[in-house]
Image: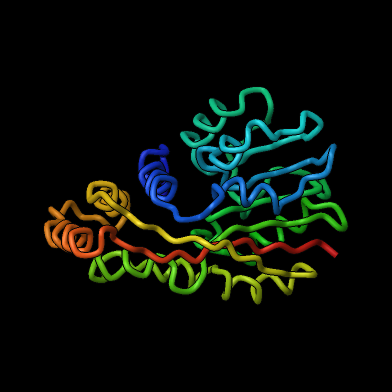
Length: 247
């Protein structure tokens, strides 16, 4: 996993597919920004910030009164995030299971599309709760049942997409959070993919840690056939946001 996210190359292939072929009327990161609702003066931690795509897509909406801290296990991701936000944020190489911050440091903590990678989620939730102020809010974007089902079928099981949803998804996540937080709620984003080119799909598949160097000829043929038949290779999405607060 550390090699998979040493840089943003693999993640970028996935981001690009979603951004280019989404059917949503609003950019995903703009949708997400509207729902995290950061008050003026907020002290904000994003754990597992990756290449700071959330902030990059909302640069025009940043409030200078916010105190932003971006953390990630990967120094390479931190370098990319710093290139996006510069001196608008502080940056820390850190593991969400062992956050290097004092208790009650942040008003808001976010961890988007990363908790399904965390080996010990209860420990991570305890750490998030510890660094939040009383009444502070935790936001975690993730995926739900059926997300990218057609991509899973395309890869014939060698990339089991459902494992992330099973680990921490819109359905499986709330019961895991309830022992640590109050007012756990889920909001879903309406979106799908209508893909009109083959190569972005193959680039997405190659970005997986499960990819073993195979030629992907069967996958190419299946996507080409779908586009020839239907005009698009359709992929359903199920994404959204889980929010809760520290009592």
